[in-house]
Length: 435
Image 1 (spheres, rainbow, N blue to C red):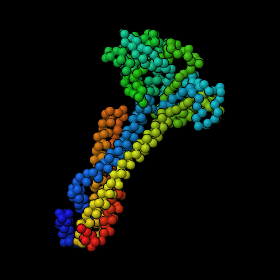
Image 2 (cartoon, rainbow, N blue to C red; image 1 turned 30 degrees about the vertical axis):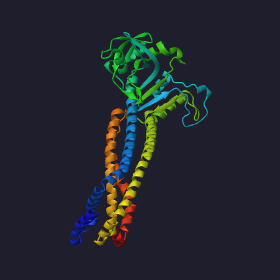
Image 3 (tube, rainbow, N blue to C red; image 1 turned 120 degrees about the vertical axis):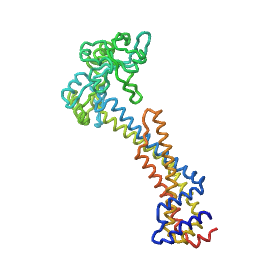
């Protein structure tokens, strides 16, 4: 205490010589004094910073995980196919909430419906009718199970999943119901390793197919491996695998409709619903025999979910920050009690109440800022580690970093406010009498 008092006198001497310049009102001097006080009780300062450090670490990491998850989901949806509508033959009453019509409960979607949509809805880039079937693939003693997608050349255009070796299925393959296949990377590597499979013959559920192409690597979407697939003409799929299981000769399992860039997906969806509703004589308020969803809706829905998840994580993590702030207030009250004589000496030598208040406010802010900085560094390191081992990035951006540092300083000012005000209201005479 004596050494700190001597330092105080040394600091105040120039101030007495230059009355126009009050050094105690200078933030730089207050910060220097704060660091001196923190070094004097180093272990206590470190333990006090621990609560703020954990709180900032938890909040920053929660924000980063939420942002990374939202970014990953949006990227995966766009990777699957952006600016696209998905049509499914399932009853959907939309927002009407009306009773279902018995004649439409089963749901329908046909090639004729898709052709009508392509002809009547403006802004369509391509359509991709689909039939899907699990298949067992056998070649040269190797075998595996995968999913065959029966479709048209538009599927590659809509999903941006084209062949980078050999070729994609063509319209002539569809017209002739050719027994040709384009393999995904996972299927190719499992069956052929590093060998080029183009031109080889495989058997899908016992039916021979010639490999005409190899799809470019696409990665996964929501944990589903997009490279674990086999593309064949939709007519071949209908004749060889699923014809007996369909209600009609041109029924579809689902369809993708890709729109040109700049076309409103909301308007495109309305146009599709209008065309199909007219074809199936669906009146307003009645259940439709189909569902139409857009990638824009998927992005919005997932953004809401990730936003709620992020808010919950941040709320839970903020409890740690609140506990850290309470710890700051407690320690600052102890510090005020221990340094009562120092406060009295400063006031006796000319320090105003505002100088004392600012000194302790700055000390609390410095304490929290240091803890917040350490917590931010730990969150950044943890984010890098999670990015390496998780399926999505965990970015700690500049905005998040500056926000974390600023927020921790604000916590110090808020929770250090009461101890600072209490210190500034001490009577110099009573303070100097304190043992």
